Length: 75
Image 1: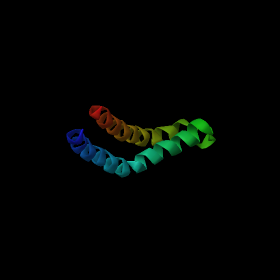
Image 2 (image 1 turned 90 degrees about the vertical axis):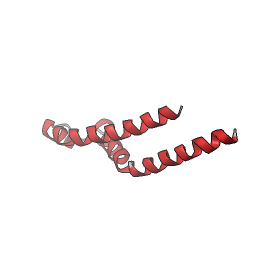
Image 3 (image 1 turned 135 degrees about the vertical axis):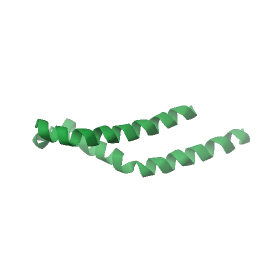
């Protein structure tokens, strides 16, 4: 059990540090969700606004999904 903890805890520390690093992406996705999906903010209902935010949202999703994939590799 101790050997397992010695191998896993450093990995968890690395993932925790990475999560802190990608926090801006997570926050941006939450803001997008809240404005566009939850509140149906009309400023985000027009195609040009969505197109402008689209690439940024896709980049944030890519960062978060890569982080989740690293979590899954531990399991």
